[in-house]
Length: 391
Image (cartoon, one colour):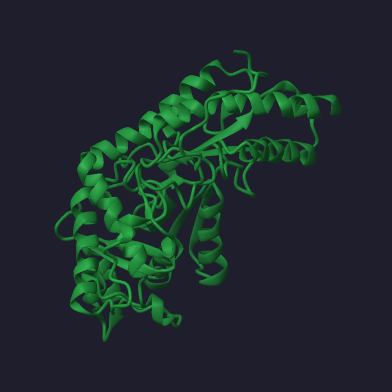
């Protein structure tokens, strides 16, 4: 079969969005049949559901016993904002940014909190900044996995054990798919709608004992909105980390996340989840290795994400196109695949270089990735025929 021939086999599930992500294999709406709808989250049934969600998350991830885990408002964004607004300002901070979300945290710290002692280490899409420059006597903020660039930190070895500052890691597209060395971190955040394919709107926040000590000993110079407040009278509001959420959670979304966690347990826990994500990356690596037109935005395999897998176009004609035509060609590529019903929502993030972004998290079947690749080649031949004439 040549690349120009229209494939006949389609992915069974064509959902490759980077959030909300594909539901776990076999999911149907019946998974929500036991949801505590119409009941208070403060009632016994609601409390039990929230406790199960927290307990299963803790167990699957292997959190240290002295680390706290809680459900917070406004997805991963809300969780990160809670940490930044509540914890920063006690000492200088080093910010790492190599994609749009990391850039967003830089903006918050420098322009909203207006901290005076901020160092920013940036890298272009597809690369990491020099991690050796980070000073762990200061607070450190970074994204464990850059969702919009497909670049992850290789490990936690670069983080010092004897640090004086706090390590705050936005890990929304890493948790449940990558190893997070918990003792190297003080704040870790994520959202339900990523690796486990849950619904949006709720965030997760993990705090180390060092982070709790900071909360109880340091008062920010700025007022905190109610949904950011984690202390009262200088003491941690520990109910947040026992299922007593700051605002009302969706019990449908809670049920859906419990279902995803039960599925994770059934297939073998964190080890199996990581293996599924890495297998998806390997399937795309095998295809890219033979492709005449596609490459990884993250050229260094050691920092290449296994969840948000970002592709660029390396065909010679593409580099000769204007920036507007490059963007149009990449958009056409993604829209062709969506029109055919074989790949939904795989265009590159709006701030990223033109290309594709294919979600490879644990809920995606490797067989669907393998069925997708001939369609990628077919769609590219259509785009090439239209745009190569422009150069």
